[in-house]
Length: 160
Picture 1: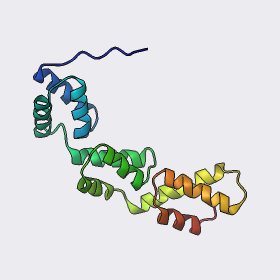
Picture 2: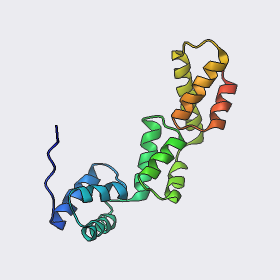
Picture 3: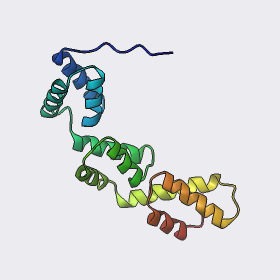
């Protein structure tokens, strides 16, 4: 079934009000807002004007978005830095802000989270061959976005 298309918004003030509500609900990137405004049917000049107004009224902040994204994906989903970085790049966040936001992750908490994830996964594995077991755990950690060296260090120091 085709979903009904939302009505087009032609008035810039109405679009600004809707965009403010969209931003107030949760942190958004400029890329997300720009896409939403185009989806509403606004022209390029209006879109850029609204984004400038949202930044000026502090509804939109790339730095705040990047930090919230990092915090949420790490604490809620247990993602590693590589996967978080890829997600931010898809949202077209500048590299400098990505680096700054990733530095907000506590190093000890990062290692504890990875160790906890690996222990949980190891408990669910039925593989007995230690080499295959280690490979499966490595692949699991990589799929979650954790770095190779940190994963290997944890696997060496623990008896998983």
